[in-house]
Amino acid sequence: AYLDCSQGRPQTTTLLLLTFIAACCPIEEVCASIVRSHRETSQYRVEELQALRWKLFSREEIHAYQSKSMDEMWQHCALRLTDAVQYVVEFAKRIPGFRQLCQNDQIVLLKNGSMEVVLVRMTRAFNTENSTVFFDGKFAGTELFKALACSDLIAAVFDFAHSLCALRLTEQQVALFSALVLINSDRPCLEERGRVERVKKEVELALSHTLHRDNQEGLMNKLYQKVAILKSLCSLHIEKLRWFRQLYPLTVHSLFPPLYKELFASDTDLPLLGIHH
Ligand SMILES: O=C(O)[C@H]1CC[C@H](C(=O)N2CC[C@@]3(S(=O)(=O)c4ccc(F)cc4)c4ccc(OCc5c(F)cccc5Cl)cc4CC[C@@H]23)CC1
Image (cartoon, rainbow, N blue to C red; front, side):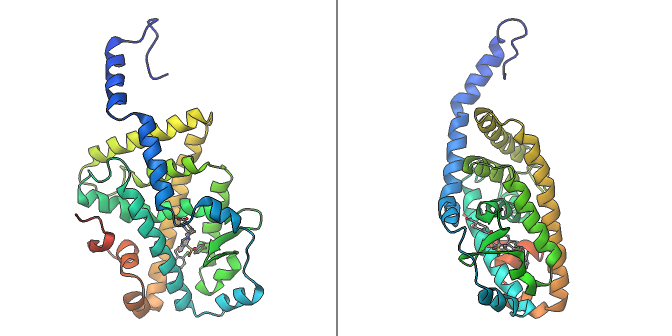
């Protein structure tokens, strides 16, 4: 399908060019390294999460979470998110070509994409049968997060989990989709957009190669529709954080993880992202 065979035989130049591209970085290699990186940098293996999917919080445990103060529960979730983001930073550093991007662009991609990748990874920890998500070692429904006082954001997070789970992605497809979400050349303030574009094309090719092999080409545009939902979810999170910060400025200032603040609560530089050489 890649070669123009309308004249009955592929154009020699195209053939040479494709052979050269395939030789320097065979697409199977790119797929394998992204899938391996995803496995190595996930907080939990999907098999572990599946094995725990019916381990639910008791009513007393749920009540204990609901009785937390709003700022305490926000701090707890911010901590959990920061943990998850650190694994995503590790994943990014292992995507072929990411480390070769300039530092500014690596930071821009992580600042804008890490939460999105965490949300994609969350779907592996989601049980659609009882609408629960893996949290603090057991599976929790939306009611557990009541103390956060942002039920619309929580509902949107759960709805997204349902909608992505409905695509029944394989772990390999989750890995490649996560890389595609991260390597987004439309992010604002990129300095070398063309280079990000080339890395993105490589990841896109790897994903479409895998979908073709899985006979699921139709998934590609469905996945791009999910990217739009991820963007709105992240904006909602930032909006809620601004609202929360007005109520509890000291909590955010002194009790939220520094990395969380730098990713989601200010435009300062991100020395903590750990990608400095
Ligand atoms: O195996 C792996 O790698 C995966 C294991 C599972 C991990 C995972 O699912 N997660 C890691 C952290 C966690 S969570 O488990 O704490 C969680 C929180 C709320 C939910 F409705 C569902 C889950 C999380 C935390 C904050 C958040 O939004 C920002 C936010 C705040 F910051 C503060 C207040 C309110 C909000 Cl909404 C959204 C999410 C979604 C991803 C969740 C993701 C990685």
